[in-house]
Length: 254
Length: 177
Image (cartoon, rainbow over all chains, first blue to last red; front, side, top):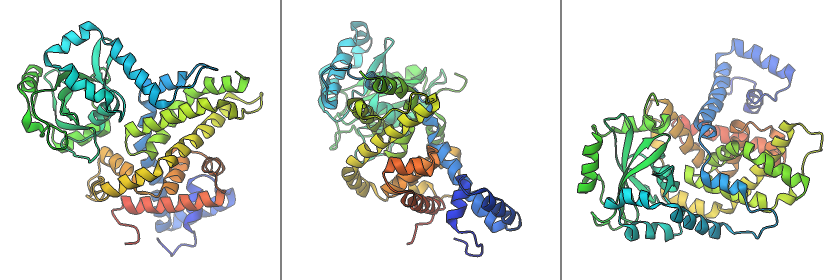
């Protein structure tokens, strides 16, 4: 910290926060005009504020997740209170019941229900990672979060989902392969603001010791077929992925 | 249902985006943040009768601010409730939490964002709260102090230390080492 200026940090902070009294603020501004170091300190404080807002403001524009709007609807006044754990179970059961035969049929070729979703549903560590929306399967909960925010290959100790590789399909949309701790793997593409699950593939590869499938090298024939069908381009580089983590995964122009 | 409970329910949806943002500044990832927001909403609805509504002539903005402050306090408490386990997790991931992004000189907006999120996670909880409430949520010192249930002087000193720590982290320097 600079010590040449008589202005202590506390007063600079108050100034940047807009709570320094008017007289002191005027003196500070006058001093800053003749003192580049002081002006720099003020600028850095402003920049910190700007960076913080830029990092977290995008949350305000995200769609509200279903479970939060459900929570807002809340228990009816006077109704028996449902603890959070039980509410989740009910939610899961409702979600399972809502899956139509048509939806199951669409993915039946690559889906082994008992092996895949049984363990996922009843692990009790969170919500269902996949849900239906207008007749399609979309990522939810920790899978949605991993697809949107994790770098490919990142192996966070407690992550419930990992990303294998990312690419753009021939149609321009971004797609990512993923594996779940249950040993299941799959492929999701960003369409209409959600991660549409294209492939869910449970049985092809044995899980590694930590439950995860062994990396992207172990792509099953089903997955390779899906990649080919999508016209997958070269995998995104880490830098390209970082850009997407910041700017979002929606295809440009949509 | 009393009028104040109805008012609370009616106002909550407008407050929700900022509630999510606040939770996101505290939790380690988006999923945990929404867990936190959900817990807070559930607790708030259970205790809705405890909410003290502003006077009947209050403007919509004042009502929203009152609901927001009350909800922030509930988020804060829910977050603190889970703090012990989070500390253990933090110890495990220390040294591998993305901070190597910070000092490599090249900055895209996305990298700035990752660096900020990682740096926030490194602050002591009380500094993280102060920074979040004042610098991100834009609460006044008094409002932030009320949410944190501390005197204003305590809030400003935590805020000050949080700023210094963030500046040091983002400048690529370890504070005091």
